[in-house]
Amino acid sequence: MMDEAVLARVRERLRGATSVCAFTGAGMSAESGIATFRDALTGLWARFDPAQLASEEGFRDDPARAWAWYAERRAGVRAAEPNAGHHALAAFARRHPGRLTVVSQNVDDLHQRAGNTDTVRLHGDMLADRWLQRCPRAQACDPADAAPGTPPRCAECGNLVRPGVVWFGEVLPGAAFDAAERAVRGCGVLLVVGTSGAVWPAAGLVSLARMAGAHVVIVNPQPSEIDDEADELVAGTAAEVLPALLDTL
Ligand code: OAD
Image (cartoon, rainbow, N blue to C red; front, side):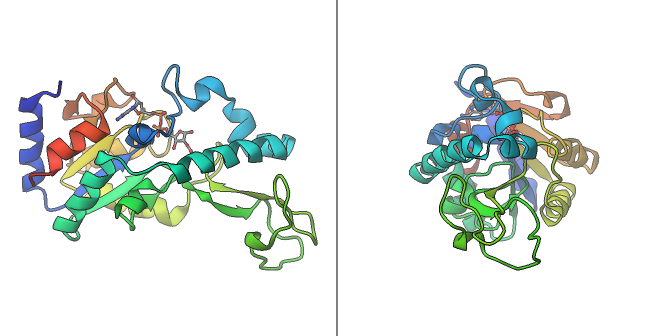
């Protein structure tokens, strides 16, 4: 059961905010059937080793293993549909042009398919391909032209294709992080949805928003590591809470 008094307070804050930022994590897509990372039984990192599957070292160690894992996840994302939470954010953005920025850690494309096509993507795009290393021949080849394989590889130099996500130990895309910082510094309300707050530097955006004066609202059915940063905790899921907060605004 959602707490109506809490929802009413947050709606009031949202009404008064000229700029709103939604900062989302894997829980945002959970009700679309995409597994989160850190939920105790169902999270991907409870069942798979991130060192093997989400690091350059792990990929190089066994490219076929990592590629097959991403191929399965890509199929899951392609088969999934945005849920009521994604749709509530997209509909709010349509009703209030220029007022909402979505900053997501998610590597699926569900915000985009719901209609938030300008979502800031901090951790990349799982459906995109890129080369594992810089081309030794300095050619600007397209990974789409790679020779088929598990993973596909360049027929000329053997360079491997990898998914376009940010792995552990890698730097976040600079332009996306800059855009995220601008959005959280400039917003009146930060809606934090479905993230454990365990992964940095993304999680640091929440304290940055708070220090810049934003009202921080965390939407999550469970406690998260950044609950201390919140002005308001809304216990519930993305697909139930976001429509309840946004649909009447
Ligand atoms: P986590 O798996 O760490 O956290 C998911 C959060 O979603 C948890 O706090 C859950 O309680 C919450 N949750 C579960 N179901 C929910 C629902 N239906 N509605 C709302 N919340 C729900 O995922 P992230 O915080 O996104 O990195 O993880 C951060 C990064 O770690 C990810 O971007 C990923 C991972 O390694 C990359 O892919 C590069």
